[in-house]
Structure formats: C-alpha cells, structure tokens
Image (cartoon, rainbow, N blue to C red; front, side, top):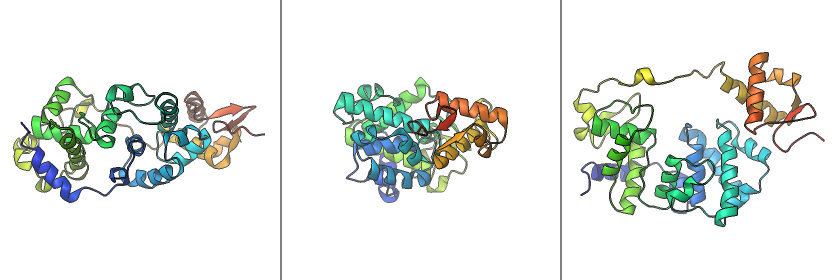
Length: 293
C-alpha cells in the first residue's frame, strides 16, 4: 500500500521541479554522481556552473581519471571541501580499473568505490538508475521528521528508526520510488526549509505532525556543532589553496600573502599536504604534480 503523502508530493513535484541538467533525460550516471558530490554542503546556485564546465571537460570517468590533479583542483575552484575533488578522481580511476568506466547500478558495488558513502550510493541508484533506494540527505530527513515524527529538525546523526520510517514511506516500485526520493528532497529544498518553512505552500501540510503540534522548537539544538567561517583553519586552508591555484607555486614566506597568521598558516599548509592537496618540492609549495622546473 502506498503511503498517503506520496501522491500529493509527486503531483507538487511535477508542477514545480527545477530544471537542472543532472535531471535531464540525457543525463549520465557519471553526471549524476558528479552532481551529488558537488552538492554536498554546497548550494545548487554555486554548483550549477561548475557542474556544466566539469562535464564539458570530463564527460566520462575515463576522462577524469586521466586528468592532472592540479587541473582538477583548479576546476573545482571555490566549491569548498576540495578533498571531494580528489575523491572523485580516485573514484573515476577505480571505475576505469574495475568497472570498464561505467557506474555500477547496485548500492553494494557503489559503496566499494573510493569516496562513496551510503547517501551517495543510494542517490546514484535512485537518480541515475531509476531504482528503489532509501535516499536520506538533510532535506529528506527534515521533511520526514516533520511529517511523521513532529520534530523540527532531525537529530545530528541518522538513526535506525529514521531509516526504517523512510523505508516504510518509500513506494514499492522502482520508478515511483525514484521519483518520490527526488520529490521529497525538492520539497525540503524549496518549501520545508530549515529556517523559514513555507507551510502554506506545502502539499502535505494537512498531514504534518510538526505543524499539528504547533511547530515545536528543535529538540536537538544543544547537540549541534556550529562553526563560523571567518578566521577558521578552514578559511586559512582555502586562502592558501587559492593562492597556489593562481600563482602555481610559492615559497613558505610567500604564503604570508594568503594568510598572515604564522601558526594558523602552518597548520593549514600541513593539513593541505597531509590531504594530498598540496605538495612541497625543494622548498616550493605547489599543486600536486606541478613542481617548479
């Protein structure tokens, strides 16, 4: 039996779904994977131009697998969390070596690839291959938590009860399940947002346990970690990496231009080197594979 929230959410999605290239009929499984990696903790508006340029340059796993790492990091540019770019390269190489350059269509095989976790594997199965999978990102968890459990925001960590509840709502057939996963994610992105939900625009507001309970506050607020961006080690890392993308290479003293605080800059550089994002050759800091000659 199909859960009663499914039909109205699907009808709403049919009317308002954003026209995004990784949803187009000619999308490839590789394109879907790239979009999912780029969209992690990054808004669609920032991802869209990068995804288009990326897919024009590296339309297949084989194309990316052969790319110089420095070129990949420059193409990633300011999307943030640049280790995601390295994981995409590692995944592309594994696909070429182990799967003939094609993405598997089952979650177990996808999970065996570098850099692919449970969410990404399920998303590729649903959105690239049109198959039934429990796709649980922050948007989906928030929508289902409000609808079914009456919670303002999901707990910091995904639990067994959440996954079980999502499985119970997921339609039984592949095609409808895949559409539902996309639709409920879109509902969370556009209507059932974290800070300003537009409940009057929600197609299932009449069935929402959170709304019926008077929109109670976040019960898990005290357990959430929040960190400002300005002045953090993450910002320092980003500035140093941006400097090297532009300059090509730099001595340690030159990196003062990127980040003046000595101790924090040293931590940022050490972290970038440990993550494989920066290399040091004869005292020169540079992107991987671009040592000065």
